[in-house]
View 1 (cartoon, rainbow, N blue to C red):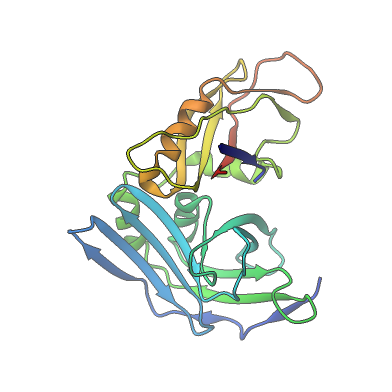
View 2 (view 1 turned 135 degrees about the vertical axis):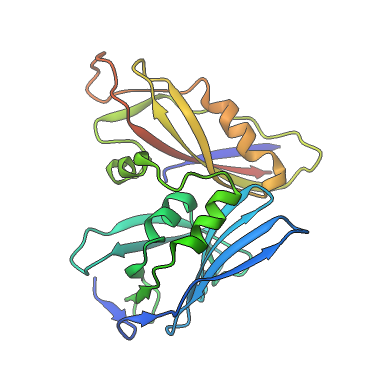
Length: 261
């Protein structure tokens, strides 16, 4: 049986402030069609942006082990500590000290200019306290730009600003699903027992979704992203108050988890 689930997408222990890296390093491998930019910080964590054979990833490594969880919450604060935090559920890699971003390209565009970044891992220490990494990112846009360009991702996307308006289920305030995306389990040459894909779309005036993009998917050759795009064609959103007024252009996000049972 094949099943899928559409997911919605205190005190802290601080590491030395700020932990810096000297520059982004770049790795290229023509055989695997890989372009990778990465930086390793004094605090023991590293950030990697990678384009591999058309798939784009952003990974934070060196975190406390996540255990058996498939996702873990991370809170990112850009700039000063008083800035508003960005909360997201990240995917846990096979190495459970590594977390994979659900929105790698927007994150790459946000970090390409460098600056201060705090990563808060909730309840990551004994006693359930949060763990905070305070990092100073090097300003080296060229390295990250190379990874974005290799995967055909824009270096600037004005729609990124709309992501801050999304709630826990990936919709702007005052909006609700009237028909959720309904993908099927992919029937490709390679069949995996589980996978996921994260998509962002733009709303049309009638509540349909358009300009959908797969932000990340895993495994890449499992057909999960393609199936999510197909399932999004019949999705609709509506006003939470029941109004039938036309929709402005808004960005929405949703994640689909596929599991074979």
